[in-house]
Structure formats: C-alpha cells, structure tokens
Image 1 (cartoon, rainbow, N blue to C red):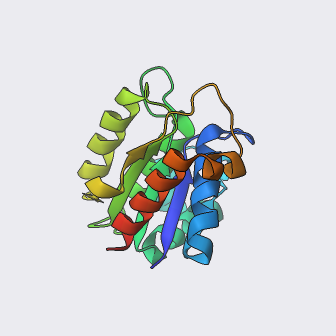
Image 2 (image 1 turned 45 degrees about the vertical axis):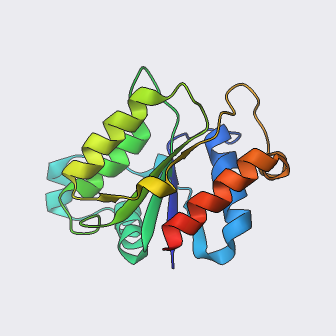
Length: 168
C-alpha cells in the first residue's frame, strides 16, 4: 500500500502539512508527502505538447505509483488553492488518476467549499472517493505540530481510522 499525500498549502508551517506529517508518523514509509507543489510550472497545453517538464513527470509518476491519494488542503477564497489546482490541471489529461482512490482531509471545519470543489475536479478526473478515508480535524488557528496532533486523542483516533479505511 502506497499512500501519496498532497498538501494544498505551500506554507512551511501549514496546519494541513502538520496533519499529513502526523499521518506519516503513524503510517511510516507507506505514506509519502509530495513537497514540490510550488516547483510545478503553470499548466499550459503548449508546454505539455512540447514535452512534459521534469517536475510534472515526477508528480505523474508519484500519482501513478500510489495506491491511494490523500489531499489535505486549506480553502482560499472559497475554493481550491491555485498551486493545488495547477497540479491537478497537469494530471487531468493523463491516465494516472483514472479510477484512483482518493480521500480529502481538512484541518479546518470551516473549509466546506474546497471539499466540494476538489470533489468536482477529482470526480471529473474519474477518481474514486473513499468516503471513510476522508476526515476533518478542526485545528484552525492552533498551528499544532505533528507531535501535538498525535498527542490529542481525538485527532489521533481520527487519523488512525482514516488510514485504516484507506488500506482496506
């Protein structure tokens, strides 16, 4: 089982990244956090036709090799952060995400629009949502570390349950 985790925030101290890091500590080497979202060029079909840029080829390989994809994202202006949407745009035309199981995670219980927007995009890409693997851990405004998330019993249980659901 290979879990690929994408963080929709580029911030070094992102709460969503802390949530993914906590999950990585529980899952070990089976969970890989993709950290190069900011290195992807802006999607441009002309560039794609001329040749896939190396960072895009690497992202596509990670997605292709993953058993499941987890996306943990903040909500920006009631939608998907541009860097994350750009990454998904690079995947739209390829086979990597077709029938790929995915789960959406959030570190804020107020991020309701990003979930709907991501679901629309990922379903258009023919992804297969694993509902039991989706989770919301209300951490907004707390900026916890991965260790602090794991020390909170409710958050730890939620992560453990989501990881179990993704493995089945």
